[in-house]
Amino acid sequence: MALERTLSIIKPDATRRNLTGKIVAKFEDAGLRVVASKRIHLSPAQAGAFYAVHKERPFYGELVAQMSAEPVVVQVLEGEGAILKNREVMGATNPANAAEGTIRKEFALSIGENSVHGSDAPETAAQEIKFFFSDLEIVG
Ligand code: CMP
Image 1 (spheres, rainbow, N blue to C red):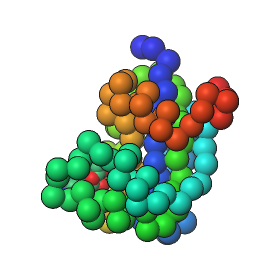
Image 2: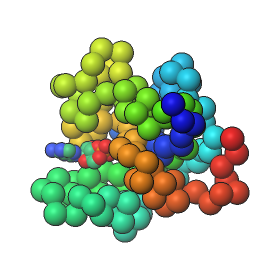
Image 3: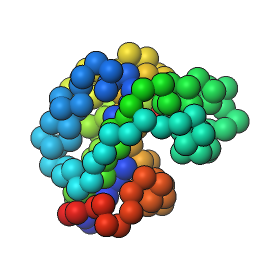
C-alpha cells in the first residue's frame, strides 16, 4: 500500500463538545499521523466553496450553516492507505449506519452533525488539502 495524505475536518459539533483530542487519538491509534493542523472559523462563503460539489443537494444550505457556525480543526493525515483508513476510522456518513468503535458511532449527533469529514478519493484528497494548506504548512 502506498503512503498517502488525506484531508480531515473535525466539525463544529465536535469542537463545541471539546472532542478534538479524543478524535485525534482515534486517528493516531489507527496509525495515521497528523502532519498539518489548524483551528479556523470558516465563513459561509468558504464553507460553501469547500462543499461546492453538494451545491444542488437539499442539505447544502444546512451543511454550509453548520460548518460555518463555530470553529473547525482541519488536518492533513498521513499513512499507508490513509484515505481509506481514515474513512474506516470515521465510519458511515449516517451515524445510524456506523460500525462500533468508529468516530461517528461514538460521537456523531446526526447525519448533518457527524463530527468529522474525510476526503473520499486521491483526487479529492489532493484538492481538499490544497484548499486549506500550502506545502510549507505540511511537515511529514
Ligand atoms: P461529509 O463527509 O462532510 O460530506 C458532506 C456532508 O453533508 C456529510 O458529511 C454530512 O455531514 C452532510 N449531510 C447532511 N445530510 C446529508 C445526507 N442526506 N446525505 C449525505 N450527507 C449529508
